[in-house]
Length: 312
Length: 312
Image (cartoon, rainbow over all chains, first blue to last red; front, side, top):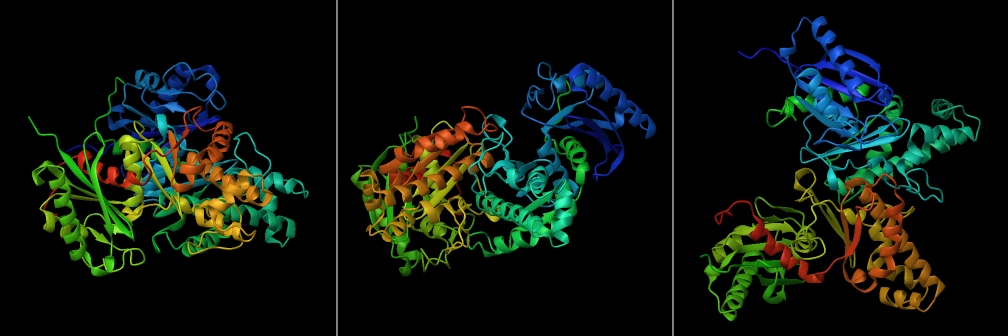
């Protein structure tokens, strides 16, 4: 009888790397977080990941043979085939070597690599708010607005395996464009930093202050939140007509705290859209928070159709 | 050696049915068009289709055994498995029986069924402006705005096999909503009827009159076209960030005549969008016009992965 086996899920960000040991039920048995320090290069990161993993395994009373493999969620752009990470802004110093090869050499384990937003979506679909659905859109509202989609059970990808940037679809008219070059993008209206910046004009310190003032009836703060809600609602209408998902997940810190301020307006708008499948699209709050990336990365190993090539 | 073989492509609309004999190069050898008269029911339509097909085959000096099968593009919603067409507005009288079973019984040939917008996209991808691309979005501007998308070589479908209505994504603010329930949808701003209706306020008879006046410098007409162009550009930015296609195809009567009035603004906006894959998304004019449906329907037969079950 096969032993109960685990996968390691790694969620890599520009600042921190989080590693968890995840079982087939999607439960994180143990986890550890340390700084990324990408400028020290891929070999250094792989050594530190390998070391952290060894300690995690030992502390759990396990052996390396209990690990099926390592799944990684990482900011893109990336080449999932070669394992190269091509994001000098978020992960400077990682552009020249393969992360998956480096980690495979350091650990001897099979490695799977995925865009971080896609990994988080896979986590929610594995054991969170997307569970059981094959057509899912997830929007994550933090400093920016990230997004990912599952279509017919597969991660939606574009030309050249690109991760689509759903958080940047235009939703409201704007003369100004930001770094993305998209006028009136969802992110420019409804991200935490967009709400915070809009609030600064009226003396609010940041986006939590805007939400707090809105809750106390401040008209300016309410107008800022209303505009964000309109933008999010239009984005959901756009994504619903483009992808026809059965579920739209809203996550990130902003939704963790304020989901109920946004969901009813979105549900109302979707219910009025006559050419969407009737009563088929639900709006749900993401459940796993910032653990979605670890769980989703590990799920890459559990769900992989064929044995992963550890010599890739 | 296998004989040179053909497929029949059928493009069904609310008013007319067009049938063509299509070869493996995507060339229509011969075609015929007759009225749909859906109120007479499925068996009547199948009899007339079968009869028309027999004449087409005979006129081409062929035998029925030269036909590999029959592909159909038809307005949805539909159940592609059972062959039922569930659109009482466009095809009243067809709701209770299976079109594919009826046609299979009438002809003895394998039948494949597809949404008409998806069939037109498949036609363009077979031998038209989408040829060679695996990630394609097509928008068709006629009375309304239709759309379809290919993602990783597969037709993009939503929950319950639904065809997404890409032409209805919201693009500009509007207090009013039309039948679709979507405020400021692409269709409500950039369809032929939307441009025509906007023009009527200024005394223009229809959308061609608006384009003609705009070409002669009429400020009101130019403003209407500019608004349509802004809407189309925002829709393309939205679809580009959601689906990351390598090609966006613009078709329909409006684009047949005025593609060059719209494409440069779209290309400019896409080139400024910094998070899209650089220089990867092109904007192209659909090539096959209203023959795309016939060719795409026939391509269902040529491209089908397994022998079609003629007893479906």
